[in-house]
Length: 323
Image 1 (cartoon, helix red, strand yellow):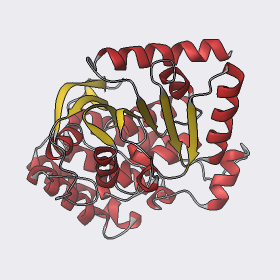
Image 2: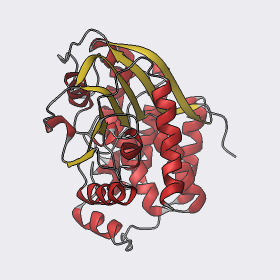
Image 3: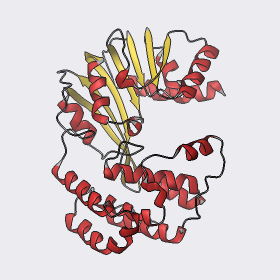
């Protein structure tokens, strides 16, 4: 089982390092390492690896895995990366699908910039705008109430720029990294029905400039995207119970804006049917029940209405039609 899971990380890391030619191999940092699978593979390629994650259970498991595999040149640390002090700058930073959990993406990128050697490499990926719709589609197919609530919360947080579990719009990380002195050497997106749900970036730090100019997450904030966020905030200002009454008005406004991001505002209409997703984070009670795999006590959703809003969203966003 260990070897099978390790092979997946070996493929990911080999691909990542292939995109970073002529790099030194002294220190690598794995930001948001989880259970440490990628970190132990990085340890085969670097003299030293520092792997950081805020989840104590994940770090405990990572240390156990490293010990079982006989890997001794990885140091696992529990805590937020932005507050961690490392005694030397890294030649390589690996940050894989974890930015959507951070209080501020901008502070995360600043911390990466200050901990990376000039000429060092960054491989960075994050969840983008179609990630929540992709998982909502799966939840609809399996009638998974737990996943539905979590993914509606992710969509709402991304649209309202709430520092909880959320998403970021495609291309915005590239713009922020360029402002910080990175040269983007490769960027790719993964899509669902033609809509981007994840972005992967390879970049080299050439002219470090860690100073932030934008808001908590977007530097710079594109004017069209700003209008989308303003529309989302306006729709949400009356709370979930007002959304139904204003849905026709806002559908017209979304179409009037007509930019690639405005269609996602339509997802706020799901709050009519999943009102607890209004809270940016799961309650302590919900987190405990999730960990223990106990029923969450959610009311049964109106699956038909949710599916209808979801189909309308995909059509408006320009995705391939849902059946």
